Amino acid sequence: MPESFTEFLSMGGYGSFIWAAFGLSAVVLIGILIQSQRFLKASDAELNALQSVEASNGDEA
Amino acid sequence: MFNYFANPTRFLRLTSKLQPIAMVVTIICMGAGLYYSLFQSPPDYQQSETVRMMYVHVPAAWMAMFCYVALAASSAVALIWRHMVADIVAKSTAPIGACFTFLALATGSLWGKPMWGTWWVWDARLTSVLILFFLYLGYMVLYNAFDEPTRGARAAAILSIVGVINVPIIKFSVDWWNTLHQPASVVKLDGPAIHPSMLTPLMLMAVGYTAFYFWVLFIRTRAELNDNKVRALRIRQAEG
Image 1 (cartoon, rainbow over the protein chains, first blue to last red):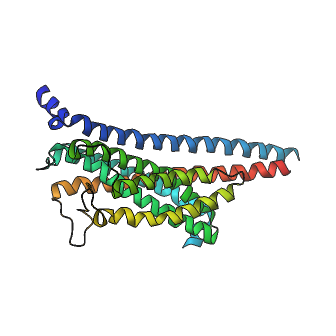
Image 2: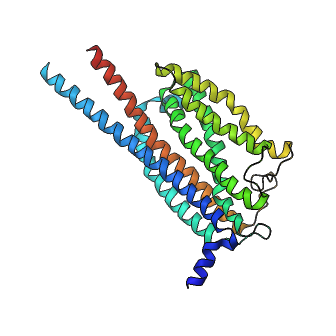
Image 3: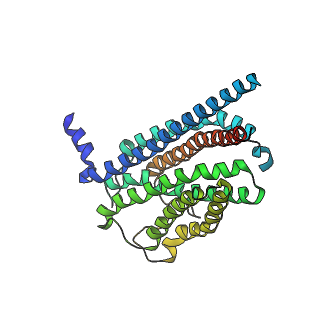
């Protein structure tokens, strides 16, 4: 049913506005989600690295 | 209650438990919400298919205000009781709220062009939401503007509390001033003036957006708590 699919995409002629609104929402929300997850991973790694340094310093002393 | 959650370890334990729940609620509600908004809900008799933009525009606008109240409230707690967790909640809320506000403005603009014939008007509703966006940006800039982090946190907290006056202005702007923007049709004293076929996707998306806020909030607060520990360890190592 390719005809009804193009009809669905055209959204009564307002397709460009509607798909832009939905697409932009998806991009921004997924964007902040990925950025936040990267932030968490980076901070986890940094903390672990510092804590292992701390532990090895403790062994020497 | 504040004292109970002011303990970072307890807060961390709670958020690690709630984070997967928020994720599942987000995925289910947004998935169902998208299906209903794009396939199940009817076109509007006046606005035809463009009414579907409501399902991403209105939840974003609600969350823009919800996040701002959360930002100002946690800032007040951080300022008055010096709770580190409240400060972290505020700091983590700001970028999420800014994203929602940006989406409310951008999707509103995309809706305005075909329905009002213009991308933008300088009326009370649109201008006050633009100010909300700048308040979020101002908060984030101010927070990081000082060498000493606590000074930035205090200055940003004060800005967010003063800026809360903007929230009722946004809410009532459509009643107080002439505007192209339509007045509230869901949050009304006499019940929502909207058909269930449109209310269902709207509510699903609203719950999905709210759960999404908490999902991202929990991720960011955990990261900020890590950063705080890193900072404390660095200071200790420099001194030791």
